[in-house]
Image (cartoon, rainbow, N blue to C red; front, top):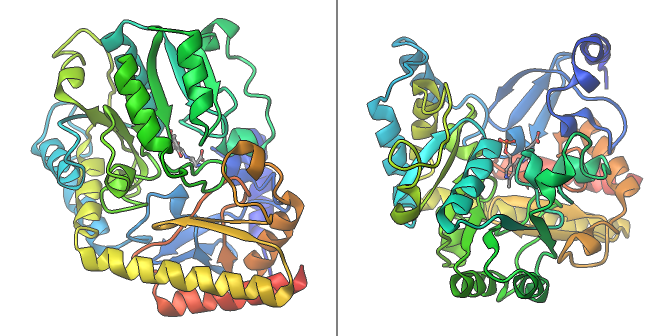
Length: 427
Ligand code: KE4
């Protein structure tokens, strides 16, 4: 595979940008080799600067459920751009996207748009603290909620991928109120409530963990979180930045029929442009300035380009038939990977919820960080590189989720399975 242009671009980029990338997990640190520089995306495909084509299962880490450069999304952005790129004032488009999101997630009564998932979770936690007048928060080991200081504690995604002991530059005082529980372990949550009665403002959880690889909630886990937070007067925040419009048309809250107090969103709702959002119970959201005293702001929040892209993207995934088709494609890929691994005698455990999935090189069904961290990362790296050679672009880390789009049709999945059979054999 000729990647000479990517090699020279990476050398140049590393002189200008730390690690040559604008987000650490893109750097291929966990899988070896070097990042490919991308020329363009089209439907389910990425094309690198050397002209190599890949079936893309990263899809910008989740946002592109409509695939790359979907004509309807591009048209919406073009039309919006002709009217200007940012007004710094309200526009009807923010109302339209808010209503569209609420159609999918009726539990969200009010919403505020921001520019990233990090801003969404950071703001939701400030709001929970303002609403409860409490300081402590609970997160789960292996879950990642963006890079706000208070959340860079035993985080997943790039922090886990790079094996970082959290991050320097985060003052101990900033994380003294961040408590960490074990995912899928209600007792570890109850123990923290027992230790810190009436002090916990929020529990923030990835309702399906995606940042330690995809780890589904065990039966009763989310229900238990809802019960204990209700009893304790603590705000339950579903961080659906990744799971929203991915694990189910209505997100994890629809799939598991649980109503969190607040939901954070990102990725899909921007159609590939920078958008995040937080929303939920009107009584809580009314505390957000200027309606209430809790301050949060953003120059480009709700900008017309991003709103237009999000509106167009959500319109394309409104029809149930689209979800039935993606479920069928997911099953096709499950079966294909399973048979490829069996034929090659390679131990893998697959997890999938809706359109997000992970192939763990392990025989243990993942349930928390302790189980996933034992997966064979070296073998994952070899598989990743072989799949790349075979024209399939997976997430470059065992601790990440893979995604499909509405354009990953039967033929694309068949080609992926064929590539996996060859890759598994080479392991
Ligand atoms: P952003 O600030 O990256 O838009 O969103 C942060 C975030 C919040 N919550 C969840 C559940 C998330 O998965 C994320 C971001 N996800 C990672 C991928 N695991 C983004 C990829 C990256 O960091 O480059």
